[in-house]
Length: 330
Ligand code: HEM
Ligand SMILES: *[C@@H]1O[C@H](CO)[C@@H](O)[C@H](O)[C@H]1NC(C)=O
Image (tube, rainbow, N blue to C red; front, side, top):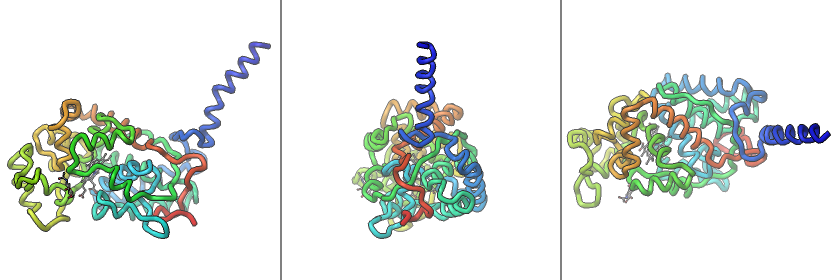
């Protein structure tokens, strides 16, 4: 009798968390979240991303960045995707996003396809998470299994976007503390910065280090000189704010470890890239490790992307599943 009771008790203890988890309590995401409700969800996201990247290679980078800018503001809740209307002030107009965050039309296409096949099921926050993984894979980077079940916010935070997302001229310490605030450590910071192995930056985001790093009219002395001269050709002292340069001048379309090999040669584009090598021993060692071992970078990148994707998700009955990623359900 005692044996049966303890067996029952044990089974209950084992399965209780599973049941709760399936109801979405406890804030736990898991890969099979849409297995029954929308089994084709991942394939829909993948195929729309693939088409978009085939049209324009850079779109992979742009989509990857959207997930980051979403997760650092109120958690990964699709808040970034909301347009201004009613009480909502869009995060799209923040300093980090204005004139540089892009890919919103592709997110709309993915969401429209999902709404056609499984209406009201797949969140915009999960669309961003899956699109970030798919963009990485399509560009030649690692793959990973994506925990799912995020729900969408009914609010956005312009100030959160301005204050939480690091700026390219922040010091190493400021950048690290902004990552720490999200529960991410120095290893996550270095690995995730490896995203800058693809995509582009506007001149306005790195001009300061070309001409006037510290307000003394001199360039950033850690910058390799011929590389700096080259950049000054493309990015004038004034004007041309929107002119683009490759974040990884070796292979801007390829997700590989050349970003880290650039940093070791003092050829990082953004100040926030180069400080990972120049300002801190721990991060310098990580940069060197990833420069030497692409496999190690890929493993850590996948792990850190999952960690970033787990920042404060809305689950259970919190938030909603938006019908249109640009606006809250009425
Ligand atoms: C560590 C702090 C970071 C800073 C300061 C930073 C800053 C920037 C800046 C200034 C740009 C160029 C924007 C422009 O002027 O056009 C950029 C682009 C980009 N960032 Fe970051 N970033 C950081 C971390 C990350 C992370 C963690 C990810 C992804 C996980 C990421 C992904 C990207 C991508 C893919 C692009 C290229 C986007 C495109 O071509 O459309 N960045 N970042
Ligand atoms: C960083 O860049 C911003 C925007 O260009 C500028 O307003 C600010 O003064 C810069 N900060 C530092 C410390 O140079």
